[in-house]
Length: 206
Image 1: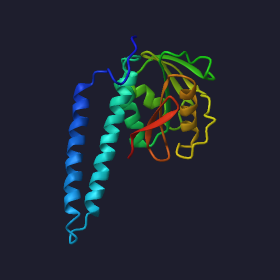
Image 2: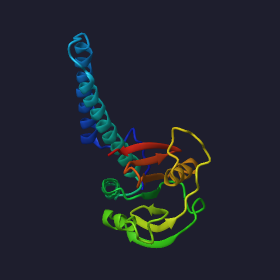
Image 3: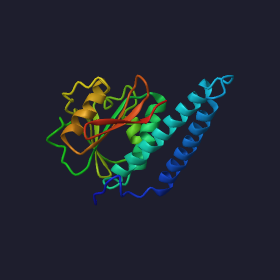
Image 4: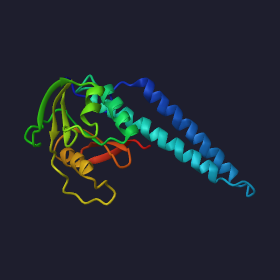
């Protein structure tokens, strides 16, 4: 598949939604700024609304960039998005490594071969609690689930701002060493993130 960057990918409808959301947020902040002169009106409720709106925009923007990064390397990027949304809603932990240009075979400890097409239902079943394949990472290459129960290299960094759970450390570790995209869902909080180039970006914050 051809390569691309987030700057030249084409998800125009989603981009327009993000732009409109940002315009509305800017208007809300402008109105809030004006209302601050009214000492008889408590603004805390408005701050909470703006915070929630910003989190929604952040989630939508993260989905936009994630799809941009994935789409040149797999046609099943929407299945991946649906999968992590479902895992997040049910608080089922998950770890999915998507190979891009850099080969990953020499960076991971291989698990159990799968060799099946990527579908969100199969991915969700792999990470269902109690499934013997749910520990470790799923490796995706193109439109195929190559294997499950793979062990990824852990990050050696100790950034206090980064998540310290094993899944998050594995996501960071692999993306520090390759151009892979790693999706991670926390079973403790349900938060979903993706890692790229050694950084984590939130996708879903319940």
